[in-house]
Structure formats: C-alpha cells, structure tokens
Length: 274
Image (cartoon, rainbow, N blue to C red; front, top):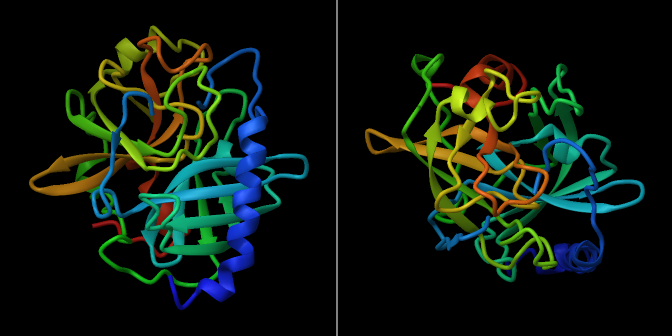
C-alpha cells in the first residue's frame, strides 16, 4: 500500500468523501418488497475472510456501497442489484479495516446476469472485471468456488458465514461502510420454510440463512456466504436481500445460490470451478 500511496491518494480522498454522502443519504428507498439492507456481527481479523471485497458504486445521482467476492485475479462476484445502472465502481481489497485498505482497483466492465429481475430480485448476480490483476497476499485471496458435485445440493442445516461492511441495525443511521469487516454465522434453512417469509420473491436459485444469531443489513448485499466442508471454505451464496422492515426482526437472509450459476460464472470470468 505504501508504494501505491501516491497513485491512489486522490482516489482515497474521493472515496472518503463519497462515504460522507452515504452517511447522510438513503440510497435504496423501496416502499414494497425485500430490502437489501450485519447486525450482531463479529469483527473479522486481517486474514479471516481475505476474499471479501468492498464495492463502492457511483450512479448518476447517488453513491452506494456493497460487498463482493474475489473469484479470480481479475474478477469480483457481486449482486446485480448493487451495480445495475452504475457510472463508476472502485473495489477495495484487504479491507478488514477500512482505514487500512490494502488495494484500490477500478472496475473496467460489469456483466449483470442476463435474466436479472430488479422487481423479483431473481438471478441477482454480477461479475466485475478489474482494470488490472490483483496482487495476492495473506489479506487478499481468491475464494474457492464449489465443485459441480454440489449442484443440486441444498446445504440445509450447514453453518454458513455471511460477511460485510453494512449497517449493524435497521435504524442506526451509521455510515456505510462501517470501519471493520463484520461477519455472523447462521444455519442454512430450507427453501420451503424461507418461502413463508418471501412467497412472491423466493426462487429455487436462492439459498436462505437463519438470522437467530445475526442478520445481513444495509450495505451487505453482494457479500460472500460461505460454508466449510472437509476443511475447505467454499462460496455457496451472494447476499441478495432481507425483509423490507429491517434486519432485526428474525426474518431470513436471502442469497443467490452460487451452485446454480457455475457455468455462467466460468464462461464469463477467469474463475476456476473445481
């Protein structure tokens, strides 16, 4: 980071100014439907979730922050809802602490899933191509995608980890991103039980987690949802939305199920599917 300080000095100032705007604005206003709003989160250490990426998005009339996952040296997997209609995007890596970001990289192009529906929040995925390759380090690592052997696997009752820099409560009014990367662990629940909460929106291409011990909140969409299997951490979801009345009411967190999109991800990025 020291070698890049001159190159990114102006960019860092611009990002900090953008974060001030975020703290005084409500960038996602929706009267109906699910809201993309981590409460009860645990602070991540420098190398706990090294594939998590902060995604700063500017639109023609507003600025927003969300999450993403490093899936190759040149690609970030995020949600479509976060970036659809963007003007510019900057990715922050090695950012377990927002005052100690290891790398800032601009995004050269964005691919939103062709079947994405902003009304139903379905197929809520995007692939961001970085303007240059990432420099890997203990704090910056590529996430492990699930193998095709997991296609059709429900992951029900697995203990999942959800991470992000989003708000820690529904009405905190705090700036997004929060300073520290937070995570919580929640059980994957059946889509049948999740459907009770989201009958109009939930699809088989979603995967849901319980919010008994924490919940994704404003600014967490696009972030990684992982499980550990045979000692390996694998990416099974990308956070999409939670209940529109807030993230503290015990409603499930809904994510996009990565195993249903492995072919699309592999065809449109340098990511390796085992």
